[in-house]
Length: 183
Image (cartoon, rainbow, N blue to C red; front, side, top):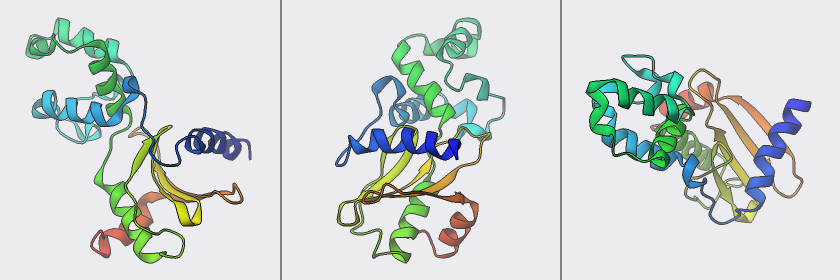
């Protein structure tokens, strides 16, 4: 129960302030981190970050480790011009890689549960979640952006009642969405 309450507070409070558009702070920007990673790191480290040839997970939320590698690893020296904010964004992306799986699941939910999840909306990120907000139902549907070593769950938040439902591990939902062709 305490775990659910902690999640609800971390999910509901930030979302309540961003009913229309919500973005993560620039130092924690997953989108910016993904763009920087794809431009500067993808060639050697692959994508998503949890499928790397080398163990890069130690750099998750650790921009200092990345800076240290840039200073000591000649193959990474070309990255020296990256700012501390750039490295913080990359470290955040490594910790919370964004995948198309989330969009696939959310789209599948909209097709299969149109009375709850319509009209179709754009995904947003905030408080460690990728989610969509549906104004007519005052509801949120989203996935936690857990580090690659953790389980990602699907959540539904009824904004009228404040009831948060943990729908469970995304795997069965993703399998259903993939079978449906990822709407």
